Image (cartoon, rainbow, N blue to C red; front, side):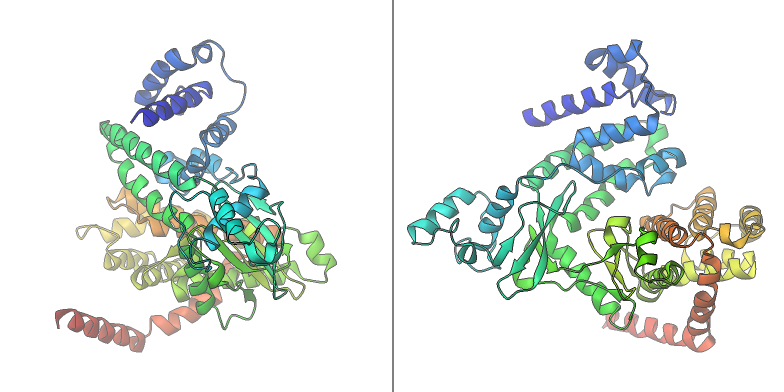
Length: 489
């Protein structure tokens, strides 16, 4: 309780110093709270206005608050419906980077994880066990693990300098005794303790914000619930490994995509070991050209890869920033880091793809019918009015040069219309929309003339023939009937 109180004081001081709440972008009731906090914790901010723009102050504020708040800010970047488009754009610039922790500490954490009690890689670490005690116990058994790396770690070499350090974890390169190179991802020390402390505080603040009538509709507690659910993947690396394994199974026949192999016997809640894959950042178009590769071809392969993940499989990588996508010498796409994944039910995949099909045909009545059938609209919705609203926001976009049309932004307009008609957009669909914008951005980085509509159109039409034919609809109806029958039995 006392630690939470002091943590709250720390948060208030940082927020006040960065002048986050007293900015004119904040709602009036937040500004009122901001002035009170500033009076107590940063009175200078009431006199001296910061010269930094709001976006930089917001990003610096979340970075100063710590790793959990960085991740929370990234979650909010997908919810423009909650924080507004301007703030969501700022939050997308939030870099998930922190100074690395010491390589010696990383070795101790691995020792604690894999030499605990039974000295088997899969043993579960004791909650309060001290890595130094583990080392001492090993010495008493006649094994000085500081001197014998083979006895201490399952690596013939372990690089103490991480290749990447983020808010939750960092990654080291190592070599197995059998010769293979691997990437070893290690959670930060005490990250579980810090997370448990901060998530309680976020729930507490969400309940307070819910007391304000104007903020109640934003459902802040549900926002924290979704964040909590997402963080389970990031704080248990076995779940990330499982996500990687599932994606690998889904894409086993996709010849242009590579998912790194998991070393399950060297993976636990706190450590994830995967094969090491060499590649060039997908953003480095100059180097890709020097390698003899065609960025336009890579852009096309990347778009098709995402369409297959999202619409064919219903399970997609939702953190497609530059550090997580490499291209090898053969031009194949390498995906890394599966901590944030999106999952779409068949109903949602059908609805989104059929809506895009309707937009391609400029059949806005079809889009309206799809939304009603999927349950995205209240049953008493005036479909003609909804179709007219879709036409109003879509026709100006359709009239633009096709290379400037953003499918992600089109979906954002569609979701906004849905909200205006009284329905809350599902978080999974918002995550899809945010990821689509990232995919389009990467596509344009690779090829300035890329046309996402042209890439999507044959795929969507092929999908429509397969999924919207009378035979396909009949098969889904029979499957639904059999599933319902099983539930009854």
